[in-house]
Every structure is written in C-alpha cells, then in structure tokens.
Image (cartoon, rainbow, N blue to C red; front, top):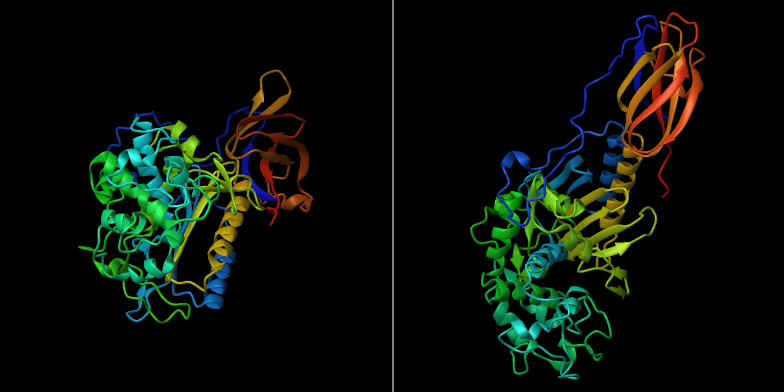
Length: 498
C-alpha cells in the first residue's frame, strides 16, 4: 500500500482543511478542426513526476539490459494521459567521441517512421481525396500490379495493412543503402522496382505469388509507396508535406527525413551488435518507411497526438474518427490484429496495445500506447543485438509495467474534511487519480507520524474501504467523541501482472 494524502483537523472547528498543492486538473482542449496550427515551443510536453515510479529499479534494469546487449545508447520516456511522467537518456550517442545521449539526441526511427507516413496519408483521406478501397493506380503516373494477377486491384487499405502483395527484395534494397542521403528519388526508386523493365524489377522477387488482398507480408517498399502517394495527392514532396502538416503544427522542429543540412553531432551514431563498431550515417530510398530522425521530446508529442485521438496541446493533426479508423483491426496478420500500419496486442501485460516496432542496421525503436491504461512508451536505441532484437521489447515492457504500477499507486489529491452540520458525521472528500481501492485510516494521537504503515502502526485504525472510479469521491465516518482526529486516504494498490 502507498500513503496517498492526509487531512488533519480539530473536530470542534468543523473547518474544511485542504492538504497539499492543488493540481491543475485535466486539460480541456477545444477541437480546432484540422487547422494544424504551429505549436508554441512552450507547449512541448514536459515531464510530470509520478511520485510512486520506481526509477531506481528501472534505471538498474535498463543498465543491465544495455550491458548484456553491448548497447551504446538509449533514450526512453513514459507517458500517461497528457503528460510525460518519466524520461531518461543513457550511454553514448557516439562512443568514439564520448558524446552522451541527451533529450535532444536525434535517433533514426527505422520502421516507426511508417506511423508518421500513415498519418500523412490519413490526413488526405479525411480531407476526402480518396477512399480506403480505391485503387492506388488512379493516383500514380505508372501502373503497379502483381504480374501474376495483372487485373487485380491494389488499394490504399491493402498498402496500409501490408496486404498489397508487394514484397521486399533485400538484395536490391541493401545495395541501395549508402552514406548520406539517397541518390535516387522516391519516385525513381519505385518505378524501377515495381514496373516491368525497371532497373530493380524482378517479378518473383518484388511480388508475392498470391494476389493482392490474399496474403500479408510486411513490406517497406509498400510503405514507401504510401509516402509517394502523399506526394502525388498533395502535390508536395513527401518531406515537405510532413513538415507543413505534422512537424510544424506539433512543434517537431528538429525532426527530419534527410541528412542534408543536419548537424550530425546531434545524431546518435548507429552501431553494430558489438556496440563499438559504428556504421556510417546512411540512408536508402525507403525514406517514408524508415528514414525519420527525431528525438524523445518531439516524438512524444506525436505519440500524444495519437493517444489523445488526434490532438495535443490544442493542436489537432487528425480527426478523432480518423485515429479510430487507424486503430481498428482491418486484417489479421501473422503478427496479430493489423490496423492501418499500427498493430494491436493484448498479450500480458497489455490490455489494448497499439504499437509499431522499428529495426534497421544499428538502430532499434519502439512506439506504443495502451488504449485502456493510457500509458505510452517510446524507446530509441542506437544499436541492435541481432536480427531478432528482443532488447527493445524487453525495455518497453519493463517501462510500461513500472509506469502502470506507479500510476495505480498515485496519491489521492485535494483531500479535505469537515464536520457535517448537525449530522455527527465527518465528510472526507478526495480526488482519486485512477479507478481502484482506497482506504481511510484514522488516528486520535496528535503525535502520529502521518503514516498507518499498512496497519502495523497501533495508533491508526482502518475506518473504511471504498472501490471508486477516478475522480472526486466522498467518504463519511462518524465524528466520534475525540477532541482530535487525523485521517489519511491510502491507495491500496498491488503489483502489475507480468
């Protein structure tokens, strides 16, 4: 049990005594349509401490995982509702230069980039430019079709759920990775990869043997085509569309798709699995699928916008109904329920987790939030421990569990007590931060230490237990005959299932 808040008062005064600082209360944000206004720098999310969060245990756990996996650097944060409740950076952004990871360190996002790309496309969908089951060829300057099923239509929904039958031919994709920015445009790459006669085209390697819509295979090329469709529909280069409609409105001023003009000393260098051999700063034509660079403060703002159904800090980038559409199961993939780019998991310890992992040479990332607990987690790593990198999910799970335990044990606030006139009752009001069980304890000893110590302190007596919903609650107890009484409200919480 955790001590939450107390109220002390002398009964014969019958005063209402407010204990502790008053919280600001839940934010009330008016919907502003899709104006996508520029965010003020001060509106970037700031850490809001959760007192019960066990940072000592969490820091030790992350340090141990980093040591076991030769991880150079890590940046993480946990979010609840509309606040960052914890954020920390570990290790080195550049081992050779001994540059530490900090809040402003930019990490390559790998496949987490796809979430931003999907949001860009869904902005255009909600503006009425297309329907999810429209053929993508209606918007392209070249036709894309599975050569084994040339008349079968590839739709926007198929691209967004990895069901288009386009697949990744890594012999070609790896050959196109190079230092610096790509030397071919998104359009040039796609036309050469997806159209017969193209430089990279191979019918059996670039497409599945099944028709579009019949099978799911994770595809970076398909996600890159989503980004190109953003270009074609908006008549803006993909990166400029994102800057104008996502990054600028959200105050993500340092988030970029390309390395040109970037101060590389602000970027986490990717490292090989040994944790000491760096990769050069690289890119590939898979820009919308993998090449976003951003940091924890800015990406947390993007995560908050999805957690809060399209808005954060008074800025709306998507309609609430559009986020709901993205976070609905449109298909069942080999990895579980598939939304529009986002995936869902209900595996322990989660109730309804919407997430996307990222992994590329020398980087691992995780972007996630649980729709029930409203806890979000970001993890960014400039290293990888092999093709099936498990450290990213290990870290994300532990951060989530620690945050959930802390939030479940958050103190009651705004605790007040007063004598009900003529009723012989003391009414205690308190604000419960979460649904749960709350205990009211009483002592008549003026020399008490303010803590019932889970019932082991003989000065204290349990006078009642309530199962309540989050919000304002009332507990009534007989006034008794004591000249002095002190009450505490304790949040009775236990560990999260692992």
